[in-house]
Image 1 (tube, helix red, strand yellow):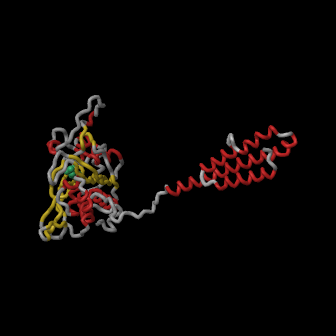
Image 2 (cartoon, protein in one colour; image 1 turned 135 degrees about the vertical axis):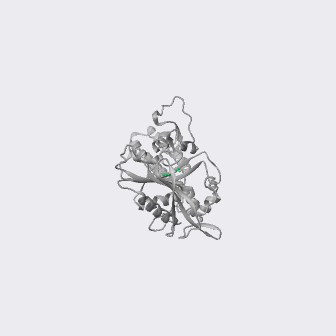
Image 3 (cartoon, protein in one colour; image 1 turned 120 degrees about the vertical axis):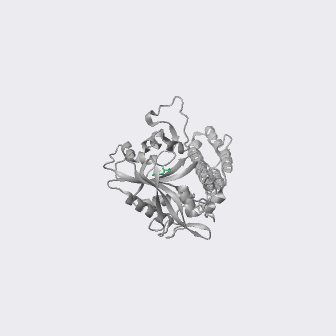
Length: 370
Ligand code: PHE
């Protein structure tokens, strides 16, 4: 089997040809076995070196070694190329087309309560109010005592409060009393006065809870609290603020408010505020200079000196006003919904009908309507 140099050249050309023609890794592997495997032709040539005369070995040795070297290198290069091609093919077939068109009907919308909260934040931001918040799980001190509602006070019983059972082994709540679900947003007044220096101008929208349920009451509902604490604040400031707010919210200038004397333990004097409505085809439309009737929309008053003192401020220096307003009711009046319970049913048809576009940003200057 002592091949001539021409035979070796031919063998090399043949193997290199087979390598470059291999279309896949399996084909290439069989070329490798054919050339370099235990029984391979190149392996056989290498073995034959041992049987050669020294002269012949000197002549053919380097040629056979370089043949093996070139074939091995050729296989490695081809293998690399085939693997790269395979990977590229896989990557191309597994891409995701992120340019798919958006659905024809946009899905998802803002709940009317969220929409109204946004509107309130915008309206009051234009008047210089910041948005504050407090915990929904409160203690008796913040929800009642600090608001001038002592334990014996009938207002406590009137609030239909959800109390928590005292947790066995839990740390005592000290003099802050039992834990409860806040019955109004007024405890945020206390937290804000204790947490920052006056002057204060905040609104605090959020969830509130009372054990009550019918067409106009749900156990969870939403309120927005307003609080202003400064020097020399009087009823005139309160009245102007409420009028400006209600006109901006209902987007009408011809809105008349009626302030009725009332009672809240945490304000003195206290008043309830009614907004005038006009009857149009039997429907109550908020607004009109000469109202056909009145609808109550919020409670308000000048912050009671006892509340200011409970927060560590001197009521001879600081005064202010506060108001609390049901957000769900505000939404119902503006957007014409009649059953409060539908707000929290999660019925998609209702949400599609009354929902708002997410990017609809209301402002006092640009209008707040949808
Ligand atoms: N917290 C009162 C309520 O829930 C509303 C209110 C707030 C009244 C602030 C006066 C001042 O009914």
